[in-house]
Image (cartoon, rainbow, N blue to C red):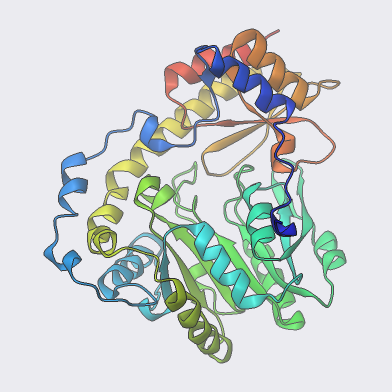
Length: 385
């Protein structure tokens, strides 16, 4: 009765079962996986946010496939002011989420069962998005040696005649690694030679640990590039459901891409008018939210590093940005076993590394936006002599 694309294994795994048991018993949990900033104790200007929706223009229906021009112009200003990148508003499509933006781009580039290369390790959502779009994901490796880098041999080995694009996460989630200039040059060269596109997720772009802004792919003109981001992370407003995709590259490829995206977006017209008219105020919230989040991330990471330094069998992997930390477990320990034991014994929730498709070694992934008191208590239970 149901399609094969939704034939997922829905039985809870051991980790999920352990968590369900604690929640069913109303057990208090130290959650080190918190990713919803609205529940992490940050200060929001609630009055300004709510007032932004009191716009009489929102009562009129003006369907625009790319989104209303004033909202797209705000995205353009964001790139210019925060990243010194000139982005044409006409190259921007507004969507309700980066997930929807991915679906637009996947549909634009791929016939059924065409292939997109994705980094390993990385965010687990891609598999579900690809299944729903009948796209095949083929992994390429990120390697670690006091910092993460692309294994270009694995990229080349993964290429087939059905490859349509290379997906990047900048910085990667959860490794926190930005693409280096040399890697960008090699990727552009490969895309030109093989007639491929780049799909770049930049939702964590604005959170470098050192505070120095990183270059955005929204300025990339060397190959056909689709850059995705949105309010969820930039302004810590996941509930407002505004994201976008920027299309750049050679004009001979950009123009037909925009024309086809127009048809895709016009078919759905999903983003509501009130949110688009409120968008300038919503995006402006980044000015107050980003400093709060960066301070939290840096302080929690410093606390974690100090604790790890006292226990040499543990390792905090190097990272440059984002909201997460990756811990390498002492030799002989299983990430899933450790994560389940932490839940059952100490009521501490962490993510085992295999959720993010890490390789042979065992890792744990924890959120650095966790409220400081919960974070301190949780990691003290996690890292013990």
